[in-house]
Length: 319
Length: 240
Image (cartoon, rainbow over all chains, first blue to last red; front, side, top):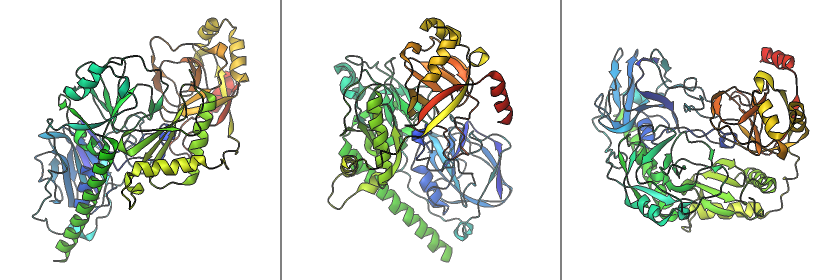
C-alpha cells in the first residue's frame, strides 16, 4: 500500500534513528530532532524502534490513505487525531495534520513502517547533504510513500487507552535545559559565564535542523582561543565571533572551528527540539556523571515502556 | 602553533554520549599522524557501543552509547570507555605499520577550472606554471574529512603557495574544484558555497553514497596531484 502526499507541510522528512559510522567521512547522523517521540510512535503501531517515521515540523502534511492503516502520532500537539495511541485510519481518508498547538515537531509512525532505501546504513533524510529519505529532500506534493506489510496486531480494533505523554513531551519553555561545560567554557569571561546560566536566550527565526541560534546576552571570551577544527556532536553549544551561541542538533557539521562553550545534555535534546523559534531557553548546569545517570535512567524507562506497549498490543490482539 | 604530540591523550567529554581525545594542538602533521594511528587502533579493537570515530587535526571524537559501558560496580560508562580506550592506545601499535593508501588525483589547472590560479601565482610571486609544478610536486596527507561529505583537508602544501581565503566566499563552487585556503589544500566534493582559492578541477567523484567506501579519500591517505589538460578532463567528464 502507499500514502499519497497531497500537501507536504513546512518541513516533513523521513527519519529513522540516524546514521552512524560515516562521520569520519563528513556525513553526520541526521535522524530525528526529538529522539524519544519517534520511538514511542513506532512502539504504538507495533514497529521496531528504528523504523522510519515522518518528522513533521510545525505545519504538517495532508496525506491520502488508499488503504486502511494504523498510525500513531507523538511529539508536538496536533488536533488531527488522538495522539500517543494507535489510531485506525480508514481507506480513502485524507488526513490533514494541521498546525501544531504546542511543541515544534511531531512524529507519525505507520504500522509496517515507511519503506525507504537505506543510504549509508540509514533511511534518515539529511537535507543539507542531500542524502537519505526521498532523494535527500523533504516530502513534496505528489510523493507516494510506500508502506511495508503490517503485523497482525495492527489490524485489530482501536484501543481505548493512550500513553501519558508528560514524561516524554514537554514544550513548556520555562523548563531549563541542562548544559554541561564545554572545553572552552573556562575561556569565557566571568560576566559571560554568569550570563550563560543566569539569563534567558531566545531561539532565532533562522534556526533549523542544523542548530538553534540563540539570541540573548552577548557572550565573550576573556582572551581569543587559538583552535583548529575539532569534532562536533549533537548538543554542542558553539560560540561564533558574534557572541551569540548556536546549539547544534541533528544535521550539525561533523567538525568545526568555533569554541565549544557547552553541551546540551543528550538526555535534554528531545526537550530542546520541541522549542520553536521565538521560544525561551534557560540553561541549568549539570555535571557529566549526573547527565549520564539521567540518560541511562531515561533509556531504561523508555525500554520498559516500549516493552509494556508491545505486551498490551499482543494481549489486545488475542482477546 | 603546535605542541608536542601526546601518545596518552587528554580526554574531554563532548556531552554524555561522546569523548574527545586530544593528542596536541594546532596544525601539526606529527600530531595528526597520532590521531590516525589512534583511530585505526580504536576501530581495530571493535569496542562495543562505538557509533562514530571522528578524526580531526589534533583530536579524535568517539561517539558512543553509554548503555554499552554500564558495569555491575556502578562505575560511570564514560570512565569505563576511557579506561578501555587508554588500554587500546597503550598496547604496541601492531597494525599501525600498515602503509597508508596512496592515490593520484588528476587535475586540470587554471582557466575556467581554476579561476584563481593567476591571482594565487601573483600572490606567491610565481608564474602559474610554477604554481602547478609545486602543487603537483608535493605528497599530501588527508588530515581529516569534514565541512561536507567527502571534503578532504590536506596537509603538505608548499608554504610558497599559501594564500588567505577570499574576503567574500563564492556562493557556488563547482564539484571537483581543487582549492587552497591558508596553509591547506582541499577538493570540493559537490557544488557548495566556499571561500578557498580555486586553482583547478578534478574529474574524479570525491563522494558517492552508492560507493563503498563512499568517500574517494579516507583520513590518513597520501595524495598526489597530476596535471591533465582540458581535453582529458572533458573526456573523463563525458564518461562520468
